[in-house]
Image 1 (cartoon, rainbow, N blue to C red):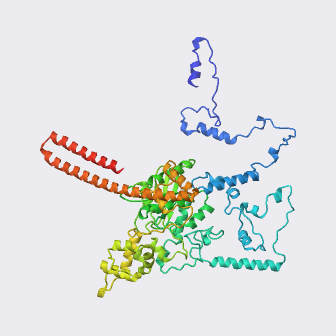
Image 2: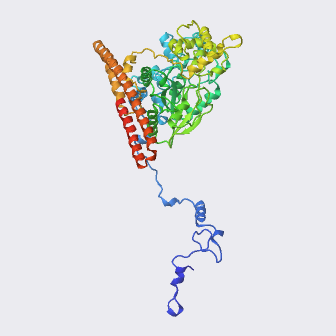
Image 3: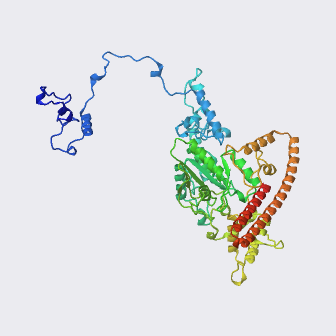
Length: 635
């Protein structure tokens, strides 16, 4: 008996009988509150929770617990129970399509949770277009049978009202062939056109032309036609670097593991180092991924040209200028970091957000990651092929960066000389580097070459061989018998070109929507690179865009006034630059004088005790005052 029952017992002398407790504990093995025998440990028997679990396994549902209907029951004749649920009207669906197309056309709007949207209905891969049908209609060949449409492409063949409206017609097969012979002839024509498409070179990655920009070719697999059928035959095996399946497999890993894709391009040749095939693959098959374009190495081109490129690319993809340097603070780092933080806030339902960096070799992908991290976390070098496998780097608790090896599309439109100039191949591994100097002389101005190698104006050349001969003699690169070593001189030129010592850049194409260089110079600050529109608090950028929009609508008279005003502003800018140079000289002199006086005072005041401390503090304050004053003048 328990303590409670023992306490209820009265002594025999009290005259009262002992009564039993209210709850008796049995000794059954199925009773969770059973009484254990004497001198038995609790650990030897089943615990209370184990007994309850076993009783649960043995129990059966009680049928009489809830009353069951004995008579036939009837369901309410309501359309909510017998009609379709989660349906949408065609008008609402069209409104959704328009809203989604507007959001997709705006590069600074983000569609959240795209993976949960029925994109096959809202935005198919080729909205409103069927394979080959629209092209054949333009050519006048309508005798081919209609192919199987995808998504909303069926509405281009037959409208919704013809099938489901009150004026619907009977559904009959639409055959474009009258007999079997005509059908066989059409099949032969389609087979011949298909063979021509397969033999045609792959799309030019420098633009949207070519097979890469056509539907149905190169969409499903990025490197399915990497070497087969492209028409590209490299002169050396070294030019196959970046086109192997292993490298493209690393690209697939980065794309699958990333929520945001950042494509890094070289500011000297943005279109040439931009992979349009990857962008099209992301638009068609990875629509939930967000794309960002980073224009790296903007310090190697004029600010006006960088401004034009940023404005041009910002109409398609969010574009940011960047300048990754080791010693100095990277320009554009804050803007890129703020943009990535905005994506993290938009994807608040995810535990972490991954950002993948892709692009050509030697464009600065690893350098951008190191600049964001403010220390060297990825191996970076001024030579291509330094990154061989993808690397995972943590930027914040929720933001991760992925570095990808450089990729190069195999295309016949990209010559070997262009691959060398874009930094795809290391110059020391090229067997005949002198073959690519002609393209270098076309892109680099002669004055820049003379200034780089100290070649006098008397020395002239007509072709690359004469130039390399002059350079080899200038550098002392000679072989036996005093013969100039042309190959070594060519490698020196290629090294200087890839590392930015020889200035060159591809001018932006003429476009009516892009501002001229004069107008861009007005908008670009001369002290540093431009800022991107990604920062929502950048009011100066919005004001400049509003000014440019007004310029497009202005009359020719207003254009003349603007030119005169720009000429005046240029003169004022030149004067301001001269004044700034004078202020810098004054600043330098003031700082040097203050430092010299501080050194003299420190030597004289070594034996002065307290006098030494007060004098040194006063001299330091003079130096600080001179520096701040010079900074104020310069500002």
